Length: 207
Image (cartoon, rainbow, N blue to C red; front, side, top):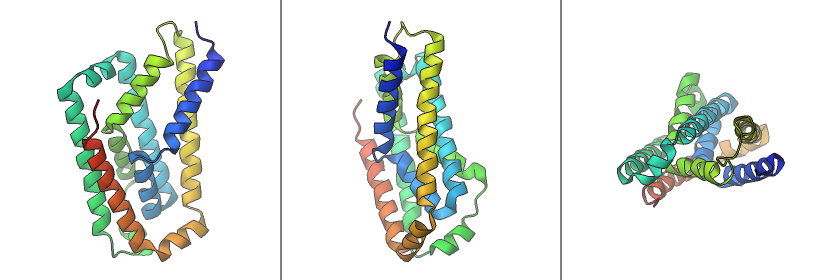
């Protein structure tokens, strides 16, 4: 049976590397934090964490393996996720001429809206399915006890929560927000381009 401390080290390292790699979750948290401030960023992050738990749940149940093996199921997930990212990208372009101060007043969305953006974005990302399936295949083996599995899942989620807290707090720092306000039009275009590009990239993912 693999040593639990080694498994924790591996799962924390893998999770950290995935978190710092730019992807749909990072872009949507950045966009929402800039548009709606720290509350929006934190609620979006909470939605992502909820999406992670859903990924974990179906991987434990074995559904993740079925999705990865089914061309139809994987394609539906892939194209739905791509379409959602492109939609968010176009939304960023449409707010291109809106200043950050106006955007904050005009985008006073309920907390559930930011949360839903985070969870939908996370769930529809097929790379999330493959990541958690890989973790449950390579790190959490059939020999891993139920208690050890819970500890590993807790470590993964604690790492994710700590990362998003730090990430949102950094983005919402006054100096950084002032800099972004100065270049808000460029920022909207950059996020719009990144989201559309990520959508196209997701659409081209192979299993």
